[in-house]
Image (cartoon, rainbow, N blue to C red; front, side, top):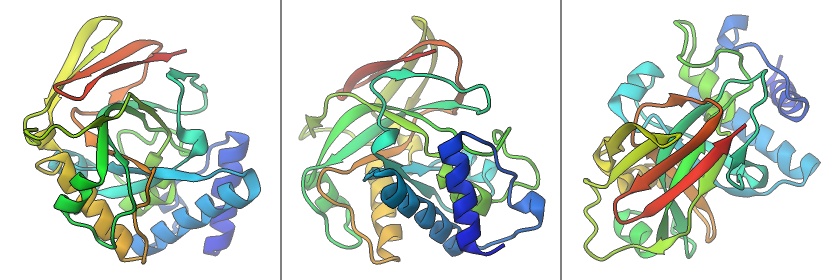
Length: 258
């Protein structure tokens, strides 16, 4: 099976809400650049066949613990399209597994240069409270099995599912990027908290990594794109109810899961 056939399989699973088998379980072992190419081909099918648009990216495995779990030496990205943006209500499909991750979202106010560095990214961004809902076409993909490879993850769009964004704000002049606290509640009970320092030292570093990774393919971040920069806590298995996350300085938002 070639990469175009794999892309068609993943896209049909996405459209028809079906599961696919891990590539590694089928004896299909591809490298990371090929996995990103497969992800891009599936995204192109979403654009051309389903009239979706790219709205931004997610950054995964931004902590050492999550990279170890995902068998990766660096983070990974997935691509958000217009159908990824949630209005704040998530309808779970019983065939899929869902997680929840509290993350700060960067909203670009202008195009950034190829491989942009921190100063430019901060200058050309607003930030917002965010909640990401990862999901994937594989059954039982979290936690990863012993045979699960990072290429498996990237091939399935790095489990980019849904993104919920609060109102974006101008970045405060005296923001301490390392010590932004995020507190997560479920049905009004506090269930976890974390700090921005777990996101590659601070979330701007994660967006810089993304900018550099995209630059390897000649791609840049564009005005209007949103970037989910990395989870403040370990991922939570999604349950029906209401989740709320409160961030220092950035704001808060909630998502209802049905």
